Amino acid sequence: MKATFIEREGNTSKFKMEFTAEEFEAAIVKVYQNTKDRYTVDGFRRGKAPRKLIEGKYGAGVFYEDAIGSLFQEEYPQALSTLEVNPVDQPKLDLNEVAAGKDLEITVTVTVMPEIEVKDYKGVKVKKLDATISDEDVEKDLADLQKRNGRLVESEGPAKNGDTLILDYAGFVDGRQFSGGTASNQQLELGSNQFIPGFEDQLVGVMPGEAREVKVTFPEEYHAEDLAGKDAVFNCTVHEIKTLELAELNDEFAKDVSEFDTLEELKKDIREKLEKTAAEKADYEEKNSVLIEIYQANDVDIPDVMVDDEISQMIAELTQQLKYEGLELQTYLDYIQKDIDGLKEDMRPEAYQKVKTRLLISAIAKQEGIDATDEEMDEELTRMAQMYHKDKDEFTKSMGVEGALMLRGDVINQKALNFVFENAIYE
Image 1 (cartoon, rainbow, N blue to C red):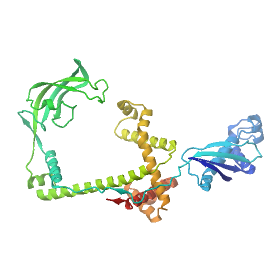
Image 2 (cartoon, helix red, strand yellow):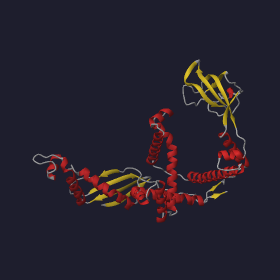
Image 3 (tube, rainbow, N blue to C red):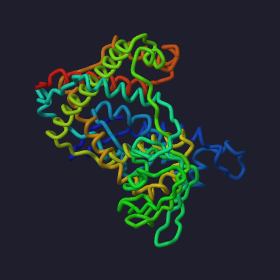
């Protein structure tokens, strides 16, 4: 087989694969040997008829399609490698006049990875974020811990924000009770904003056993379209009011809620955890700002098929996540009131962003000559094998050639990301 590059126009490449008459004939013979038992010819048992009789009965080109397909599948990867063509979609094939005894020519047209020359990716200037933790931050976290470990005790009222009500309610729109607007012995913390705006505010000051009418307006963007923007009246009856009783913040509290013996030790641990979280958040946001700057500084002509493939992957991941939660994709679509095409369009901007970012990082790696060493690959394989609780050799074998190539790409891209971050200027 001889592969010859013809042209590249935008993200489309065209090249020719040429096979000699002898190569084509060998492929036809191979197909005949593998498929002759499919054909019946009078006077011969199935699979025993000579090739010429089968061709005479079913047509001279009966084996051509399979022979061409076999040649193409065997030699296409080599042609891509020889010509350094990186396809992102299935190829379109055009053939010359096909006949036994003639050379076979296949003209291949295929969408390929865009060519990118990334600019302005070194020395990106971003704002360095403050990750300082104040005494007030520590006290707030401590207060949250105190609240989580409080206990609800019955109160005689009146109810105030922070209190928990046990109540019944029934909702009406235009004088008619609506579905989903009724509950018994519902628990509601005032000030938690669990219910629609205005509902909880009107229950402040209520007493145990009191009935109260609450008037609200559903938000215009409310998920139930038949209620969106409508005025409603809820008839509420409060059975109980419970107040959160908080433990005193002292050494005994620290012993009860943690492994520490003193309140000061607990505060120190809270500060350290907050500092770690703040530092990680600042680091993430700074690095994300670097990527945003590079993303906005570079235009990329991305083939639609790459975005479509990313959307398909996102839908597959969403389907798996929903399945884990015991839901079907169609149930989710019904809830958000969209069909699958509407969901795909909603996902398109995010899919485009993901593809463009990956392409930019991969192009930076190529421009900087970044590669993955054997030692780095070995370290990554060891880490992943441990993560999946498998023997490293067994895990490596299970990945196969394609999986190993993907892993190498991941390692290279991570190194390219680190290169970009290390060369950024944090002001």
